[in-house]
Length: 467
Image (cartoon, rainbow, N blue to C red; front, side, top):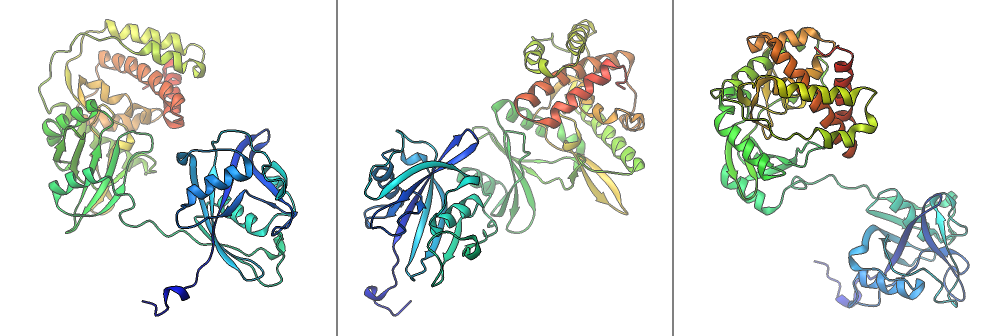
């Protein structure tokens, strides 16, 4: 500890600056006022700001007070956002800590409320900030716009008070890397996982960007890794738990194993399946064929993980609702094609129901390098798994077969048989419905990949190039 007495400790003032933002005709604007009278930096533009009054006032209370005193507008505590903290020293040598707060929501219209201290107030775009501006204020704005959390602005004796780009003293302190537990989930998830596998020392968020489910990779204190997943709804949780308990074991080491489940929390812990998704990988043609052959073998195992059952009567579909959303992006004839194929599907003889993965596509196929550059395929993500016609699992994977009959041939070689004429017809019908659904979802959820896949499928069906 320092040997200095409390009276001798170095102290600096703390002040607060309010960055009020609005959208103007040419983009975002910030509110600035021009100082006047017998104050520091008179005649220069500055943010609404002031000192904290004492230990009774926190930075948000101080910001509220200064905002009301200088502009007449009010805001709620929940509408105050952190901007950046700046450690500043003026040319005369005095230092202070400035906390720049961002305000986007308020009540009232800003106006000059202290005419003896302010003779101008206006909104300015970022590319048209006024001059002269206090260098300290400009440093805070520049640091905020750079996304900084902390900055230093130590001016030297003789520096101008007004901002001058030739003597810009702003230094942005780099952000520290995330700590090991920065992606740690809430305590309830941690407690559940550690009860299942022991103490966890590292968490990493592994969620797929466009899914609402959450997935973490958890590393144990004694080594080993697991995946902890929270499903987005009870239906997906029940489906994946059922699949992991009853059907996934047929895949052996080519799929994760269920370790623990928590129904109320919609949580599961699974063993890690090493590898990288097939999605986005570029492989030599021969290796691609081998991967698809292996996937065919895995799908065949999965489809035989339970005896086939009689298909239930078809339920009401969602095609018309999806068409309403997808219609603006459909090409001429696509809507009639989808309606015709949906009607045709309902006339086909019922197909036996088997365990299906439900979302068989490259991102749910993991590849692990084994031996001398060979690849071993595995399957993950069974939250859409349910009993259904076998062709359900060929719909999304068929997008990778467009223009690649060699991959389709390799898959069905591994699967052990080729499609019958009736199955191929059902596949075309299911592909059309899935395409319209994907376009609707991709359009409303800003998912261009899913949208383009649906458009590709409809184009292939329309031009008779689908498989």
